[in-house]
Length: 369
Image (cartoon, rainbow, N blue to C red; front, side, top):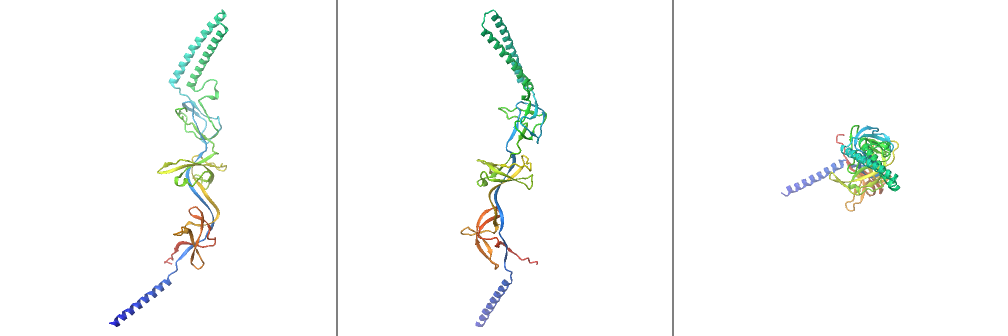
């Protein structure tokens, strides 16, 4: 019995030893785990946030009529350059019957008063010739007659203006001639010949005849999310990219950040505006959609590595990387970071340009080779 137990124990020992030797053999036969490495490089890192919007004129003037009527003739079209005072269009007046009737009644009343003052002046002259009244009384009668005559003339002109939009003696001041109030480019003419237009007054904005703007003074107008608005401030540089103009960027300066946000699609958006620098080589059309990169920070020609190479200590939260020491092994190096653009991050100290930094993806040998 004792011999049997001894044999079993010996067999177990031999089997365990053999298994251990086989494991060590297999372990030594495996290829060591290898890692890719990357070296730091010199890059320019720009930290920025992006706002979406469009290109608009700094000042856009809407030309509106001061009399209602029908467009009779248009003298400009979109893209034309005009100077202040140039004729935009002519309006044919469609008189209001009520106003026309009131003006006709005013003429009749003025004529009655004029005839009465004429008769009174004749009587006063006769009395003055007989020495009954003084020179002062005669002059008063003459003044009353002159005033009645003036009122009659004014009533006739008022009737003519209501009926035709102008009157004799007013020349270019006619209400039917709509003229440019500023110099610039005509952006659009939203009316056509035959369209009815409404005058601009205290109760109505009026119909827009044309939109005029100085296209040499353009701005970017866009919106940023509330999560980004705290990072930006006025006078920061902008890089504008326009979808219709490929491979072109335009410089601008952030001039305005709205003090109050507006809710859009469940998110709070803040309006921003930036003035574009004058462009002599390319024409930027008003209304083009654009993106503005707000430059928050910039570091030119600095040592940088990819964000994915950086690790953080579990206790101190300080950044570090693993650098190859020449024996196929890696050692930890604490580093100091600068600004990041989300892909690359500036390294201020800890590694050099010749160091090989561990990439956390082991190279797996292809079994088919």
